[in-house]
Amino acid sequence: MNEQPPANTPRHLAIIMDGNGRWAESRGLPRTDGHRAGMEAVRAIVRASRELGVKWLTLYAFSSENWNRPKSEVDYLMRLPEEFFEKELPEAIEKNVRILAIGKRDRLPLGVRSSLENAIARTAHCTGMRLVFALSYGARGELVEAARRLLRDAELGRVTPEALTEKSFAQYLDEPEMPDVDLLIRTGGEYRVSNFLLWQIAYAEIYTSDAMWPEFGREQLERALAEYRRRERRFGLTSAQVRSGRDEIAS
Ligand code: FPP
Image 1: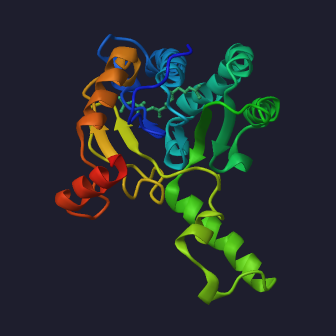
Image 2: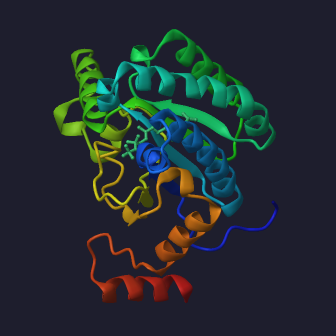
């Protein structure tokens, strides 16, 4: 699609994809069928986000807490990324989508890890949308890991307490180039952030949908983006300040 994205499209969209299990159970299906349907929803939303002009899309695919689910469900979930990359990698490359990952990669089974690393390597040259999979991810874990990297740099004399800023701290996160989240969507009718991108969502607009993740398609995404465009983002300023700043930019 060559059309320009509408003004005020979120640069970074992050999604907590909740409700696969309930979607399946309400149909008398095993929860794993819900995850499979969830993977189909991922395909559709990746495509729609790209076409709608999103520059960064981060998907919460497996949290560090999800390791505690029944083994059969974890095993099933761990099969999906390989299958997804096998099918979707050619289109990602063709559409210039760069795949990235955040989370504790060393906990992933070897097959998942190597298919993920293959997808990352084969799209490393892509300059279009960044598609980030949060896999075995928890924000507190990411922040602790960042602190660990920082302490190592401090030991080597590369950073001092006085020199540390919010901007330089962010360089120690799992994906240093990741911008702040503009819009955080959570499906499944719940109102929690569930240890997702705690640093990056500091000023995110939050949108919740009652749709279960497998039901969340392009139409629902467009509705969320329309709602986002209607919001006034104040970043701690007053509404009058925001409006006068906007007038100055326009004049
Ligand atoms: C939450 O729903 C969802 C997950 C724990 C897994 C999300 C995974 C996918 C959408 C598929 C992953 C696809 C790729 C390509 C990696 P839930 O099971 O907690 O739902 P519930 O709250 O209804 O039980």
